[in-house]
Image 1 (cartoon, rainbow, N blue to C red):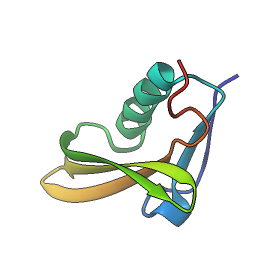
Image 2 (spheres, one colour):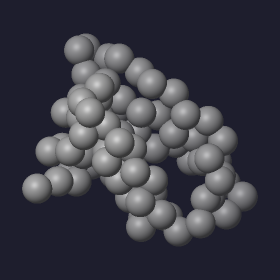
Image 3 (cartoon, rainbow, N blue to C red):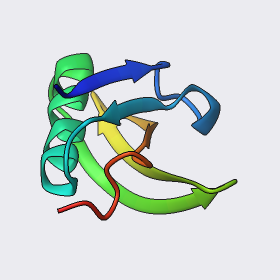
Image 4 (cartoon, rainbow, N blue to C red):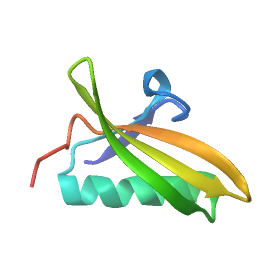
Amino acid sequence: MVRIEGGNGSCQDDAIIITDCNNIEGVGLEYAEIRRRFGQYKLLKQSLLKINDRMYDKLTLNINGKEETVYFDITNFFGKY
């Protein structure tokens, strides 16, 4: 069963963690989790980061006119199809 846990996503140390899914499901869950937490948003930029053998998606968003960055730890599902 898919799990979404971890922190608030404000930095890689507090990243939102998605586990027990494949790459396609995981990416969809990232966007669903952003909508759930923030409502409407516009994606400004997305980056893939490798930090200390962990993989992260760093999403820069416009939420109500304010730029926000959200980190997801995608190590568990990255590259799994």
